[in-house]
Length: 296
Ligand code: SAM
Image (cartoon, rainbow, N blue to C red):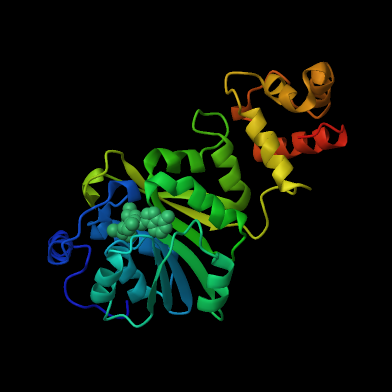
């Protein structure tokens, strides 16, 4: 740790003092729940594997509880915050740290490729580290993955149920298209469960920290990603239905018998449900459908 400046922003008393001094009021619609638990911050920082040669992108710095810890650990920190009212507060509380830039932006609209080029060139690696606003968790994570940014780890606080879905293995009710999308790009690992008392104000759901370690190459090779994910979505369209029933939406109802034969020929029982299928099996199904000219 490089630099410390008195009481941490995350200490409950300091957080309350900052909020009072700046007359800040929370906006529930922006998912504003600020972390006040330094043990959880320790776990997030440890999981991100940062050092002075590495950078961190934070999404939603709030009043800077996590930003401060990132600034003390990483070589360079860029934080994107949508709420203009937080900018003067961040400027104030983060003034001791010369390696942090706060940008007023909506992460979903930001040009991240450009941000990478402008802010992180020459670093040994960059990780995304954030306590995410829960109303947009999935679009944010999918944007980070689909834009194929050179990210080492994505270490994020999310709703516990979302963490379980991201990390789920085949066979359970949590396993679905989010698990497949995340695991196609990353190795997931749930780092910690976080009670609602770790935040001000306390959210009405439990939370968890998950680390997604970006794979060098996707977990399976597929010729057309967009098509592969359409097949996955179709397979899960109605979870209680068999894979053959759900996929007949792709093949056309009139080719359902042919579809069942095709699945069997590729070692997949047509009566199985999507939640039992591994990524490799989905890739096999996608390839077979493509070869048979079923459009996906
Ligand atoms: N990092 C702080 C902490 O841990 O205490 C605050 C986390 S709070 C759960 C989420 C933060 O994301 C808020 O500061 C909120 O204003 C910000 N936010 C919400 N939507 C956003 C968006 N689309 N782009 C960037 N920031 C956003």
